Image (cartoon, rainbow, N blue to C red; front, side, top):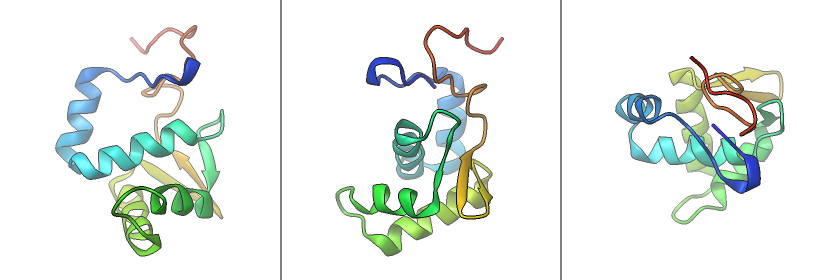
Length: 102
């Protein structure tokens, strides 16, 4: 995943795999969280809920459910009150100057 200049980057095969596992809605949630994550791929749990709840057709309750589903699927990892994106910096490239994984 690449956040350089506001653009996100992910390999097509990885995106297809994630979509097959999660479905389109949760892929959108994951990409939204990746776009707003700190440079280390982490953010506060409450930040994730606030970001997702602000999306159309979402609210705090649905955002909490979606975060729980992403944790259960293994794409988000809970660290106390923080969430970390699994694969951030390897599967998801945050800097266009960094080479994608081999």
